[in-house]
Length: 372
Image 1 (cartoon, one colour):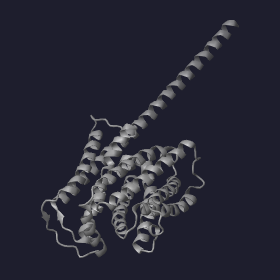
Image 2 (image 1 turned 180 degrees about the horizontal axis):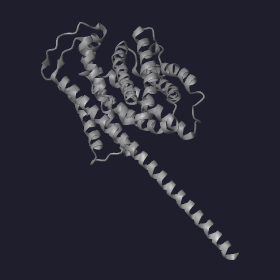
Image 3 (image 1 turned 90 degrees about the vertical axis):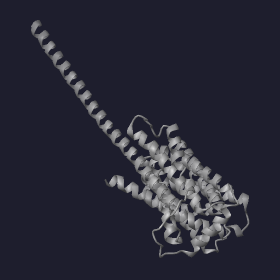
């Protein structure tokens, strides 16, 4: 039970951290911070945060860096770190935190398709587990779309006694900016696609390089150079890199330390144990958490569409997890059967060898007796 509960709690914590990052990063960009510069600072702080853990916990057990592993780390830094975060922050700049959460829910569908292509996930349509994975993925994405684009009537549940003025003003300004831009959703879709590539690469790399802290440190270090180079190409003024505004410092530290250094290590740890689809399917929880925090902190009203979308997401999440657990249980059962069958075969071979040896000894004894 603990082996299944711990990964669940870890991924729920990761999604909670991303909800806070969306709001704080939006505030930083509204203060005038370049989103690519924010991505560069995020990698720098992430590298400084995760490197000590890699040294303390994995310096004696880290596997040897081979050329294929180095290529996978480079590919992971380009897709899951640099590509994903640059496009995500650009999409967040030209949209809202809610739309960013909604578009991120394309990740399970992209990951599922790519995992099937690269044979990291197997789909047996006739099996209940395969049907549950398909239905769960559809429900998660469908619930995210319903929650994002359908409102319906207001559900009367009272008002929250908590309010956050900064976040409330951020929502008002971002809503007005959304109506004048079409770039945001496009960048967010690209971000989800390249992040799905990272999940697939990470699943393969975890088999040959099971060192989540070290691999995350390497990825963030390479991404730091990549993001700084990209940011300097677009804006090399000193004011763009200024951290005098407190919200910029908070956003860079929060997104770098928690949402990259800690989150990527936790996701790598979970991917190694549960696979890429298990991790990606938790992404829709961002919308559920965002809906609740918006009601609690911003005093927003909850609509029928919010309730329906949240219910679909929870049902879809349970369906995919049920399908994955069924597959893992079946795989373990088959593995035990194979071992038992191998032991039986080995015992049969041993018995036949003993029988052959006994017959040869008896034959030799008879021959010696006849000769005498």
